[in-house]
Image (cartoon, rainbow, N blue to C red; front, top):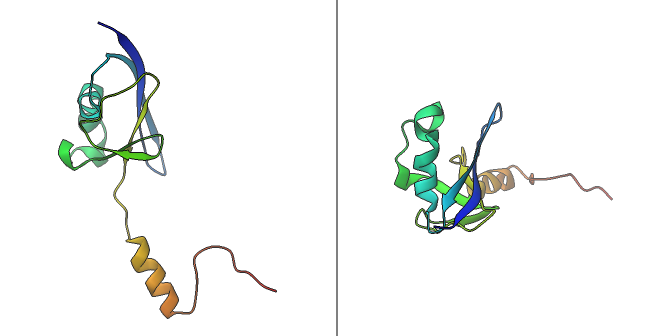
Length: 104
């Protein structure tokens, strides 16, 4: 069986977790999450179900059944605290925008 190097990351504003390992080619992203024990070790993930996790590889969204490739870095994303569209809508009502103010 061919082994490949992969990693799994999760971050909060206060701390980052990194799990690097070798897995058998054909391992899924969810299998990597299970293997890492992040769900048991990270308080913010303890109440999450595996199927509800938002995952990505190098910032590209993936499904849990995504088959890992050599060098993949699987990322577990935190849920958004606010819907970006709603934030922009609320700011527009106030006459403001997101980003740097442009003067000129």
